[in-house]
Structures are given as C-alpha cells and as structure tokens.
Image (cartoon, rainbow over all chains, first blue to last red; front, side, top):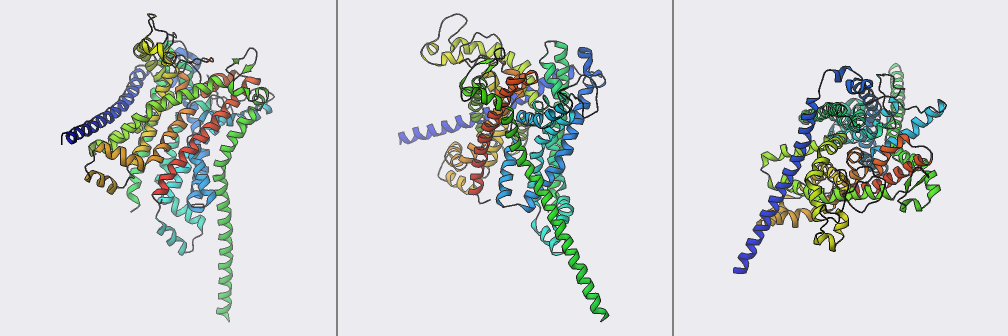
Length: 291
Length: 338
C-alpha cells in the first residue's frame, strides 16, 4: 500500500510538472510574440513621420520610403496578377480533373513542397531565367527589374493559391456538381461559373494569404528587383521595395537610418497582420454560406 | 414530314453543341493541366537553374568542394563546409529549442487550457508565423543580439566555455567537449546560437500548429478509455496521443526543419557572416542562405558560380527534408482513411 501511494504521488507529481512546463512553454511563446510586436511598435511609431510617405530614399537620413512603398506595391501587384490566374487554374485542375489520379496526387504533393521551398533559391532561379537573358540583350548591363521581382514573388505566391483553391473547391458539395452536370452543362462552365463562384470567398482568402506572404519577402528581391534610390513606376527598371530598403538600412551604421528602417518595419508588419486578419474574416464569413 | 425534318435538325444542333462542348472541355482541361504542370516546372527549373549556374564551381572543385572550409575571393578558392555547417548547426539548435516548446504549446492548447482560452491563444501563436522574416531579423539584430550579449552569453562563456573572462575553467569546460562548444572571445551578440534561437522562435508556430492539429485527430474514445483506467493527463498525452500521432508529429518537425534550413533574412542579421570555421556556437558563422544574400550582388565568375552551387545544395537538402515531412504527414491521413 505504501509503495502504491508513493507511485501515485510520483505520477501526480510528473503530471503536475508536465502540465506546468507546457503552460510555461506557451507563455514563453507569447512573450516572444509580445516582445517582437512591442519593439516594432515602440521603435516604429517613434520614427513615424510624414516624410516617410512623401520623400524618396535618395535623401538618405532626411528621406523617406515613398519609392520603396510604390515599388513594393508594383512588385506585389505583378506577383499577384501572375500567380492568381495560374494558381486558381492549377488548383481547379487538382480538385476537379485530377483528384485521386496519380499525376494529380504528385503535383499536390510537390506543390506542398514548393510552399516551403527556400525563397532565396527561387530568387536565384528568376535571376537565371529573366535577369541573365535581359542582361545579354542589353549588351552586358545587368538589368535587374521590378518585373523580375514580381515573377519571383509570383513563384512564392503560386503554391499558396493552388493549395487554397484546391482545398476550397473540394469542400464544395458534390451534389452541386451532379445537379449541374445532369442539366447538361459542360464541365468548364460548371468549374468556372458554379464551383468557383461557390468557393469564391475561399479563393479570395488564398489570394490574400499569398499577398501577406509575399509582401514580407526580402531574399528573392535582392537579385531580381535589386533596389533603386529614385522613384520609378516602370517595371522594366530597377525597383526598390520596402523589405529590401529595411534590410539595407538596418545594415547601415547610421542611427537615423535605423529609425527609418524601424518605421518601415512597423508599416510592413501592420500591413501583413491586417491582411491576415482580413483573410480570416473573409473565410469565417464563407463558412456559413455552404449549408 | 415537316416534323421529321425539324427533329433531325434539332439532333444535328444538339450533336454539334455536344461536340463543341467536348472540344471546349478538352481545351479547358489542357489549359488547367498546363497551369498545374507549372508547379512542377518551377521546382525542376529552380533545381536546374542553380545546378547549371553552379556547374563551373562543381567542375572546378569536384567532391572536394563539400569538405573544404576555404573561402578566399583573393585566390578564388571556395569550399562549402563553413556555410553548410552553419546552416545545419543553426537549424539543429533551432529544432532542439523549438521541438519541446512546440510540444508544450500543442499540449497546452489541446489538453490543458480552459476551452475559452484555446482559440485566442492559438491565434496569437499563429500570429508569430505571419510576421515577415525581415522583422525577426531586425528584432534579432537590434534587440535580441544585444540582450543575448549582455545577459546570456557572459554566463555561458564563463560557466561552460573554455575561454572565460577570468581565465578559470569550470569543471565542465575542462573535462567535456562543452568547453569548446561555448568558448568564445567574440564580444558581440551575433553567433550561431543567437541565429538558432531566432530561428526557433520562427518555427515554433509551424511545428506547434501541426502538432495541435494532429493531436485533435486522436479518437476521443481512445483518450477516454485511458482516462477511465485512471491515467493522468500527461500519461494520456505521452502514451496515447503521441504514439498515435507519431508520424505526423515527426512530419511537423521536419516541416519546421525545412523552414529553418532555407530561412535567409532572420539568419543573415544575427549570424555575423564570418566565413571561417569555428567549433564554438558562440562565435559568428555563415549559412548558405546568408552567404548568398550577402555576396551574390557583388560576386562574379567562380564566386558567383560557387554561390549558385551552394543554392543547389540547399535546394536539394530542403527538398529531401520537406519530402520526408510531407510523406510522414500523409501517413496519419491514410490511417484515418482520408
């Protein structure tokens, strides 16, 4: 009996210890989240000035990030405009045409891998297929461009959109497909006009998530869009972007540059967090609509 | 007669329409299939482009490339050992820190926390995953690395390392390899360990959300049976939930590893970018991704090719790690009959 109660006490102790440790692990995770957000907020708001949005990076310490923000907008727009149609069509193929086929399963599998592939390697890939050929065409002047940056970001956005489209289309009840097909609708009309419409908010969520993902990407832009201290809206020109300027300024020894980098980091974080919040809202509204 | 002609005409119209629909359907499915094959093409393309770009380096250095720690742009000799070691060391440290914490978080969210607290805490942890890596990098560079240098590093070097400030070696440092691991006279916060810690914070949300998701797939009757036999919450988690979800949990860990291996920005800021080998995890180092980010723009010729070759190595290794991860995650799905 004494042995039993000792065992019982030990088991209770182990249980209490494990549960305490697990609570502490969660608190530790939350501390890191709060720490990162708090510092971004504190340092960022302190450095937030109107000239951040009106002046370009060419002025350095006295400048702002206007050209970087415009550049980010254009590069992200190119990325999303390329990735959305391709991603939605690829996702539709996986869900509607190749669900449970061998090729479909393999592509779904590889798409999941592309989802977490190192973005810097994708940047080098785009460097090889776009920057190098255009450089060869312009007799040796390295032609980094906003377009190349956009293509690199499209490669990162693509798997996100493919995956959400695929998942959302598979959630559409199959009775809808059977009812439509029995009325004699060709499958392409069924896919584009009925299934995609009914999964629309899910697909939009995917696009928003992809946008949130690519707007914080830095690594693939370093050798594609490169950076530009002046304002440009020409996608064939070198173009700066918010993350790339933050990277450059944070590595600068000047304190004033760090302040601008923090302000940029604040703007970027807010934008990304608002986007992921928006995508959650769209998705939670869509959950009601199916039943 | 008139009616008959009408019927024939309408069948012809119907047939023509059926043909047209079939043709459109075929075109549509080809278009869609082409888009899906682009996913395949971009993976193959990334591997092919980096291999092609790195052919010069592979050709010049051969197998020796993988085991050489040389990195000298002056004499144009390069080896992959330092960045490869840095990549693996930072990722392994990140896993050692992140796996137990993620397990704790997942356990807390699925078994311990009161129900009303679960969703908000889970969303907060997932928020960590949404923060761009450049923000982790800045936080690491300006906030965490100085904090680490002031409060954590002195303790580690003095009590565990073989290069303490007062010259008196601790027992651990004298008798075990730990002395070498923590010995450093580099005064700043940037180090392999710092990068590992920042990476750990980055991958905790990934691993913990996979773990939490799969923990919820364990059939309630299994857990209830164990509780009915008198098991404690911990015993149910360790002896029932974990074995049931083992393959998916390993998959989640490998997913985190894949992220850690390829992460660029967060690591570049806090690793110190020293292209020389050091056994100490408190010394600065370099990873494949940070080396590429730092040097690619200014590199030319053989150096550029070397960086491409490094990118190829990174891509192949992450591909294999992610392949294992996804395969392991599939195992549980198959078990459930999905």
